Length: 375
Image 1 (cartoon, rainbow, N blue to C red):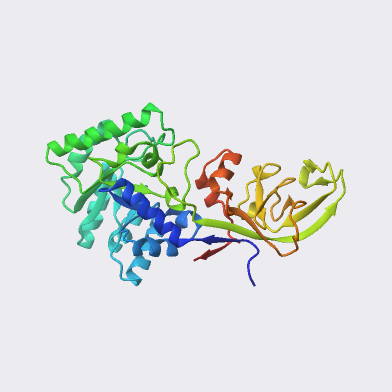
Image 2 (image 1 turned 30 degrees about the vertical axis):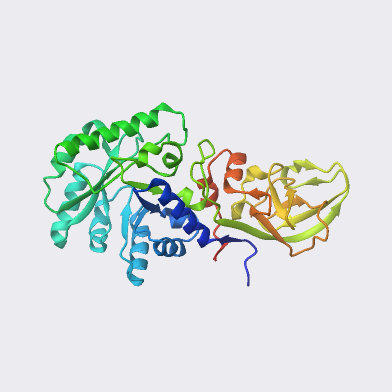
């Protein structure tokens, strides 16, 4: 039985996006962030497509995600680095080291635990120092980093491959904090380099910084992280320096069509009242499938290539649209919720603007009953 709601994922567009980003930041290398099951779209096909395009660095948030990627790459005989970008807990370290996962050093105590586990397993643990240069979430505080790094580097069972940080305000292109943050982190890296402490990988830029702060992809930085830009989306506040394209199309079907008289009200709360006789279609997708509640009386979809307004509140399983202007529409017809026609489009960024959020939220909210189809 085919699902009523599905998302088509264009892996060729994904690869084109990766290669555009790669060209944009060259000679820096690209680390593809595939956390949360590639933002809910399916990590396996994403990883294989990107690996086929030459990507050899991948980032995840936690160990289960790392295990899935490592097992996939091992099965396909692909030599690729998988890195945890957040934190590591004591009971997770040994399994991660046994798989060769790159770990974050968020403080001296965690470094000691990694060192002890590496000694036990007779391996060298590949690690990146995670520096808190203003995010306030995880890592070694910037003003303590010099001392902590030098102390940590006395440990014998660690391979100090990289150093990185993260920007909390990079989506605001004119905010002075990010430029200052990037410079302060670069100063740390340069000062360490002058003392003979150098790293193979130095990175601070994620998708927002790639668009808004090009200096984050220039020396001393030689690695960038990208997640949402791979999907062809951007934060609504920033520049769109990267010429990427949407990779997903969200579709459903029409469940019923009715001609309703003037004065009819639609949906929970009766938030829409028809001011004329209208042809109303009920489509088989709602907020359980990822359509934001905020689309009620504001959003639209495509039917037969024509934009149709959403009328009434979005329900859990259904949404009502006005198809009065669409000729020949019938039950079972395809409805494009996110996607494009020859000269028009509805993107995750459009939904994010209506909802007052960002594209990450939209893509990650696609429901579990939405079938993922790759092409």
